Image 1 (cartoon, rainbow, N blue to C red):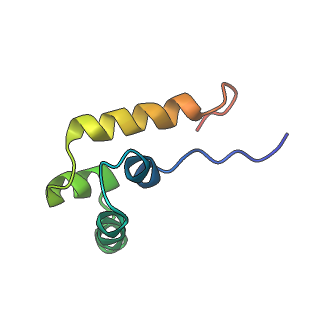
Image 2 (cartoon, helix red, strand yellow):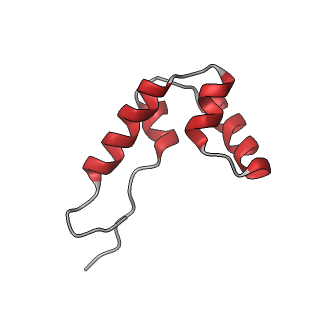
Length: 70
């Protein structure tokens, strides 16, 4: 069985044009410092909202193979 990597939330949001690469980079920097969840940081920055985060999380979950517990 091959290795499966689920799509990253930040890249899903960039791909949907919900945030920019610069927004993602800033948020990842903040996440590295604080350990907070990426969606929480992005919403706090005002660059996206909870609905966009929920949609991205659903897309991530839908992309996971059935036998992947992640």
